[in-house]
Image 1 (spheres, rainbow, N blue to C red):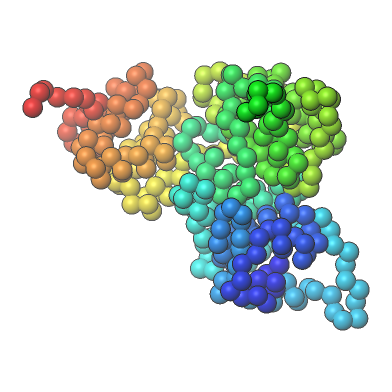
Image 2 (image 1 turned 180 degrees about the vertical axis):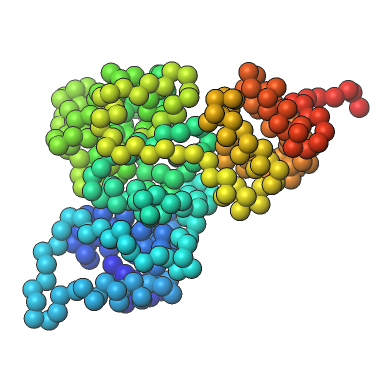
Length: 361
């Protein structure tokens, strides 16, 4: 793939075009392209459709691939539906650190370490191997951000107690003429297009609803759409399910049936070193670390995560640091607010209470 980009430097290719040239599936080629982007060995130039082009590092990647390519006297291997995963000892990206990845909302994701790999690459390799992953941890720690960065072809289902089977598989919807047509849901779309499907807050979805998903995740990779004439849908290459779980959220239940289908379960916590590198107020980061330590020891039930710290800095830039600390106290759960206020007060050396309106001006 890198060789194609190098040979046509300056040109952009869609995943579909590359897949046809290589003889691989679109899902596999899309994952390989994003791995090259993560390493700085290719550049993503569009999102609808995804398009890729060479960078200054692509030639080195193409040359490394050519070393193991068959010689003139050797028969070319039969194309496989999935590219061979890179070894775990792959050379680090230029500069020793992976490049930030731009998410669909325009924000950048900074990869973290996972099994001696950048986390985005580790997830992509697990997808290639067909190993389902469950990410768990408090809200705001970056679970969804990581998944969006790893899989640009992602389809997301925001789970809650009201999620129905129809929300996953599809249902009849009235059309402009007054009739009804069956509209496929995100699960069927992901299966047919070979895309990744995120079940966000999966443990808030009723186990009876999730049961409709399980046949697509096992060896059958097929579901039956009973509401649409019993139609059988078989997953195409590239289809993948990943889920997020917030253990502390009221109503979240990780059933044995759900847990058993996710062979890899990864704990996700806030990266306070990243918060510091993002130039978030040092005292705020120190307070968050202190509270996180107390949370692990059972002394307090809440600690600011990366999401709250990013919000803290935005508030500080607009309203000032004093207001940002007052708001940090105010967003703490009521049962933990006194403890948070005490720790913030000690850190600043002056009393801090929850942000509130003052007297009339």
